[in-house]
Length: 439
Image (cartoon, rainbow, N blue to C red; front, side):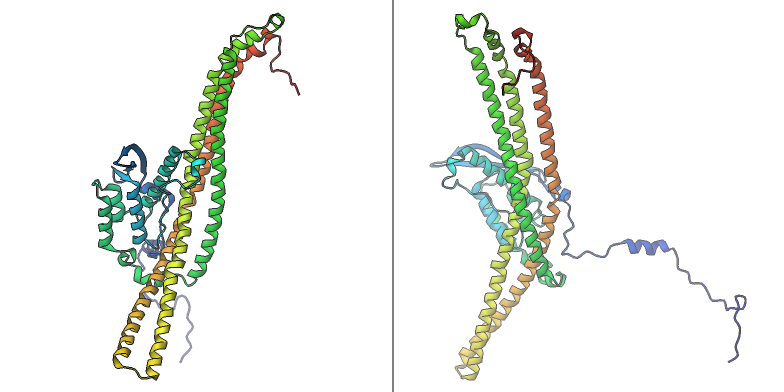
């Protein structure tokens, strides 16, 4: 070989590749890869926008022996109103648990008052509390991404006939449970992360702590709302007592009449009950706002958190427990088969045992698939809990707005009331405003 010096002028000319417009490659790079079906792409706003269902009491209907409480259910999504009784909710809840055993199904409130509750709650308060709880239940169901489009939910929210329970049962019989209809049911294992059990345990513990904290927040919010209502009652009674005092027409004794200003004061007190009634009304409004906007939102999220904890228990006591029992039974049958091989028995009994073992193997395989699908659903439901967590800002905003509005409105009434006390603390009775301190 002859050494040839290559210079820029003598270097061979190679053709330049035509790469085309690089924007196409950059656009392709920007496109996300296909998301795993395990991922639930939702936001709180999207969930809340799915539907809003109003549950309202309608006048009681008296049956042959008992009075029946009925509810008007109005769905904004389906733009229809239907009538339901508690028993309809009960069947709906039962069927939801059958259809979606691996999902968060909120609990129903009790049908009747528990023993001892009557002492602290009237029947009217119980019925109102149950109405609120049924409203939370049906809204959580209607907004759930895997329930909202299901035929069972649609039937409950839209069917107008009298036999809605039969209609719902028929809808469930046609399709079976979610494992039979979900296209990822038998493939769930492929999408689960390797550390799914560790993730499940840590998520469960975190959500348990969140549940405990929100439970305490709800209890405190309830107490504040109750105090607002009690304060309103006290203000109203305070004003009434002032009115009673001012309306007393008893003559003032002669010995005191020359120096006493009581006659003038008494006339002034009589008119103050109007302002105190207005203060009481503002206080009652604040109590209702705290109950409707703060306590109710906390209860909604608590219902969801409790349904997650119930789901975890169903997973452990249901699918896992049944799987373990099936494996134990399979092991016992295998031992029986080995014993039959060592100690010759009738051919028929051996064949029957072999057939049972095959059936048990199929059952175990199905249970394993259900177990993986249960974990698949648990992973998705855990994501939903964290999707709902920003509701905390909604709750705090409602709480602050309620306090600001309540104090502003009551402050305005107090400011209007102050000048009217001039006749009590002004020159007319020889006193300086404000009154002197006695302690």
